[in-house]
Length: 341
Image 1 (spheres, rainbow, N blue to C red):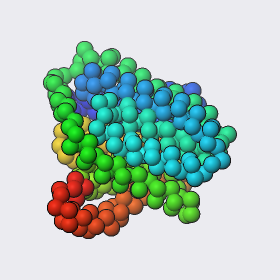
Image 2 (cartoon, rainbow, N blue to C red; image 1 turned 60 degrees about the horizontal axis):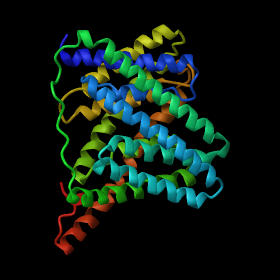
Image 3 (cartoon, rainbow, N blue to C red; image 1 turned 135 degrees about the horizontal axis):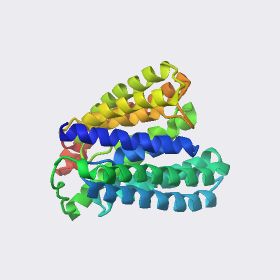
């Protein structure tokens, strides 16, 4: 077994373990636990610890402060929208500039989702914050447990991790553009959701955040790869769910196999790894239901459409904004980051 196959096996094991624990504890949205394990799993144990800790801290802080903010602004729709758009912009900006970027980004995203829950139903805010916290801790704990357990059998994978570059003042100025663009995209999504009842609004906003990049060229590449991943993972999820399997161990075997093959792409050291990343996310969201195997295919289609819709809306926005940004860049004689590529 080569290193990539070994890590795919470890990732699939961690994701399945997190899912089983979430099922056993009857968590509200067990796919949060599964995705946390999926995202945190990595060939290097130190990376699992670091990213897992940042995910837990960011999410716990986001749930706690988000609960306070959502409770204080309950019923003030306009105020909540301003907070959500600001939080989304802050998440994008901190993602590209902060020292502990992952923790800061998760903090702002979860804060925005907690406030969004208050807009939908203020009585559900405490439940949302509680379950998100324990689901994310469960996923990280599962990934950490598997990483420690398999350490003795782990092959020599990738050696040292990639060095983290120093963030300069120029980088911070450039990060303003995707942050503003991301906030505008989030506002458009909220407007469309409010007037057209878009499906799976939480998945749409999270998917929108994952596609943000410093440049238009990078964003285009991410959107195309993540759309491909959505089609791959979503289609597989729909097919497996359509089989109507009710026996947990059979369903778990198929879930494991799907995650394993998505992991092979996810842990591939190429620019196309994002296809595997999104395929795994889409597969988890489509497969994992409230307290056991997904029985109905309709919620699966609803979730798949929701996460795919985010990338389609973002792609349309890029088509509209690119000519304007390039025109502004030519008039000012500046090299606007969002116009490069």
